[in-house]
Length: 66
Image (cartoon, rainbow, N blue to C red):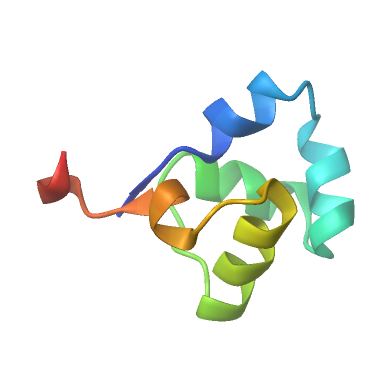
């Protein structure tokens, strides 16, 4: 699964630590998500989408959808 998390975070000038704190996860979790080493739980995906004011599918997508 691909995602736009790093792009969205950097566009808004948010540090990994800030995002991690807001989502109540570790900075390592954010790094792993951004690098595609970890796919979020549905609960975390909803939290991320809500944080950015977007739909889940605007952030996370299947590689074949590109």
